[in-house]
Length: 210
Image (cartoon, rainbow, N blue to C red; front, top):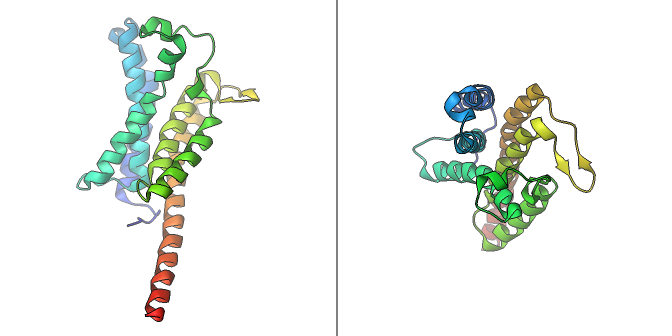
């Protein structure tokens, strides 16, 4: 069932939580001595912020109700995917040492923004042919794009073959991160309405044939 894209209590709550996570994760946690003085704590805090932003972004998309286990699992998946991007640091470094992973001179492959639509399109065709997991391409897009936007405040977006954009101003980043799931929510509603009309027509045709 597709939910309306209008204003709901859940939408307001999750958007406020998303805004709070951005501010706390980027401006408060890095100032704590236990985090800034320990490389692993700093990496975990950064990864947790990415994951929380990914999970909350999908919560906005689906108007998460914790009584719906399927939606909860989708949000957990979004959070995991948003964290998993940084595994490419270890792959590129060829080492499981955090120091090596953070010492790369170039950004690794998963941080190339141009691969997001390519992978999302591939997932769409796979899910379409499997006739299941239809939300996976959007979950992936929300999770990875929110990660890229947050990283973009430091080094810009890496868009091959054109290079990197200028760093994204922090206020612009927060606005984009909050608008991203709302835009996806609207898209899901419009697409869902079209699919409902299509399925209704198909059922009417079948009834007329019978």
